[in-house]
Image (tube, rainbow, N blue to C red):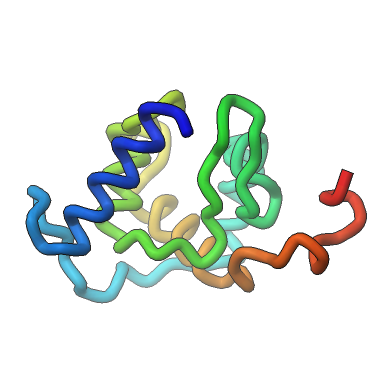
Length: 125
């Protein structure tokens, strides 16, 4: 596991325990459009590391699974704006807050992580 992935996992663990700062709100995420989010996710190249259906990947080190992410919206947006690993920064001038909400809605619309034997044949190679 890469150092950045370990740091993100530790931050998430602390946040879940209510110790991390900033404290992530449990409020509902802003409304997003999953269909638009899919277009943005694909157009901005998120799929290159995280897979077309958020299944994660190993292009530049292990990229996290994003399908049905358990990250609260605020933590997801923070990771986009100020990534803690090799991910590019998506500032508000690159990806608007509406776009972030749309991508989050798309990821939440996915079925979640798949069992290895349930993956489409193209993913089993």
